[in-house]
Image (cartoon, rainbow, N blue to C red; front, side, top):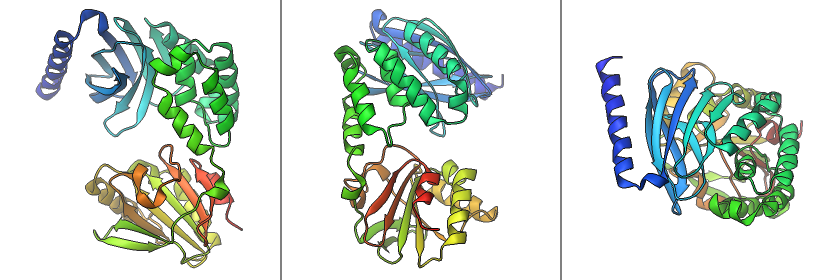
Length: 346
């Protein structure tokens, strides 16, 4: 361990000790974690406690980390890497110590000891490993539906619904599952916001529309008036840097641009990156690698979830795709670039 790593580890321990001293012993929880494939770096654990979002930083050394936090009720904790990717979730209760073993590249791999719901989550992930690895939403939704209806009083049911269930196209079913949960699960896991999002997502597509003009921050560092009536069809992509460079998005864009002219289809990518420096670097890397399509107009927004012109159009997560025709009528709104590309004529 070099001096910098040693220093970071000491800082992490100091912060953790400060948390312990500030909280009652009964509220404090401890996570002893192993993250295969991660190496050394910072992780962030985010959860809700006392009706507020809490964040704890933990330094992993050779994939091993320890984190302390406090909560008054059972809560869902999500583990993020420094780049903002969620690489693990679990349930924790006040006073518990949880031993957790995750894998950075395999979402189905989890070993847990110390919390009953998290231990059951590990079993659920193992039982549905193939669906997780292949992103088979249909199989996974069916398994979650069966589990939630059989176990409405388990906190795990709330976690499976919020983090593993795909509601797009199944909004009514998701709302039904949410309503079937025990009131204590909904209340203690703060699922009201998730219910509100599902209610919005259940809005019929034919009632959603885009304005004629959007004001967006362009890659020349100016505010541009983007005309959303200048082509027959529009595809708006909301992405982070690592997402817009993904093979699935690049392949879909190549396929669309091969089928359509610029007058027929316009593709607009709005960056959700934390700042313009990350965004500009991402665009340069794509251009240098020859993967940046000239058919894409690139923009950046400081808050993609609250762009005024998209008010009323639900955006649940990143990446997100909105397809519309020349009248502004939305014909697709969801997380799949493949599904979005299928709505355009061939």
